[in-house]
Image (cartoon, rainbow, N blue to C red; front, side, top):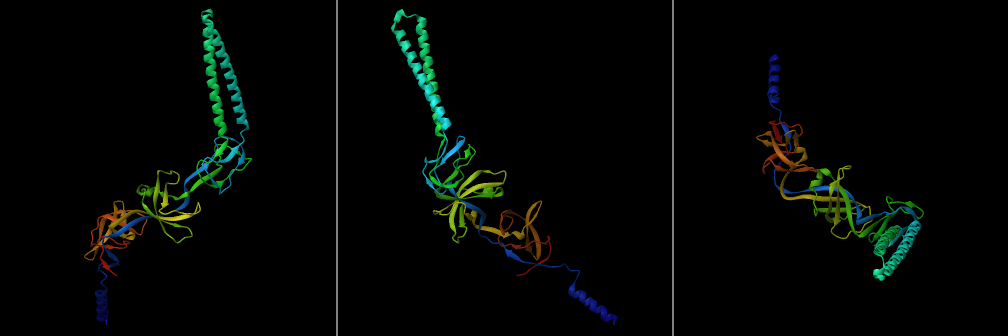
Length: 342
């Protein structure tokens, strides 16, 4: 009986071979070249290509607002008026001062003319004084003229005009309101040319270029429109870490301002490149690696990749066409015995 038990134990050990190295089943893929594109997905909003926040240049009491939200306005059209009564008084004062200076200039010129007509009969000092009086009066006329022009320029600022032709998108001004240079009265946008305003994270800022292709899908629509990057800011917002960009549809875009748009920007498009699943990448302080299968063993191999928010990453160095890569490197060790499964 003891012999039978011993034989059974020996048979079990021979069958299971606990001393043998365990073989891990892995799924793999062959390294091949294929077309690949790096796409950056962003959300933006429809905006006018040219949009201006209208602010007054002077402080005062808003006596008139001559537009309504949604109105179309021409460039230079009057949109609001600040009560100019105080500045009108300044202009009148400047006019009176100029008139007085002109009268004084005429008197000085007349005195000089009479003195000069006396010739040798006029004392030299008298003629000299008359000459200086004309010069002084002329300078005073010039000064008062400048004051009047300045007062008139300031008066014109009390009439607020549209800086561009467009549509009044937002109107926050009301008659009777006290305003200053920091008050936004209204926003006027040119709706003849719309763009999609958005921003990208600063980690991708150096990879965004003018004229990169993009697809645009407006909220509530299934149509996908073709477009391109039409503006790239040269400054990253230090508060948000975002880089502002504009996308323009290749055909005329008709949509309400502020509508959400989903956009996919193609930052890289390659006809032939090697890619691997993100799960295949192993990272440590030395860089990025993958495991390739050689003679039934997992062999760790250093690679250079382009980091990107995608399920597959482009490998730029370290892999050759025809090699076999383990698709998920979780729990795999260098030199470990592996078995490829479908």
